[in-house]
Image (tube, one colour):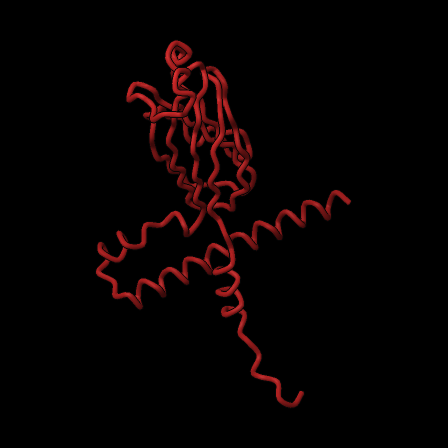
Length: 185
């Protein structure tokens, strides 16, 4: 075909796709003192996941959410697609949890308050801000650059390679899912 440019290599297409892929999920939700809230996150195998959260308590007099007291904590539990517990740990009113998936598929991430006294001073309502980062977005690149003494160009190359690796994991997972669905039809 006249005037057509050279064919783009698949790696370039993967890199462009990586730049368009969003794998950070942030939200907030309300829970009562004995309530448990769970989320399903579809994760490829051997993928790092980081969750950051902070809590606020409802103030009845002011009718606003205020920062939680230090004594309030959250319990975080993560189960893999086979129902096996990957993480089960108590944290404070603000925290960060990390795990690596070893089985591809739907992982269940559950949070609940460790307090049974919250109703006394919070009206039983808690607001939880949750930010889940999956894959290469979970890497702390400034820390990696300092530790490995990488130049800016070396760091960017590492980020791009991590993105390509993550896309390949996600594609492998999607192919496996398609195979399963095709077998059911």
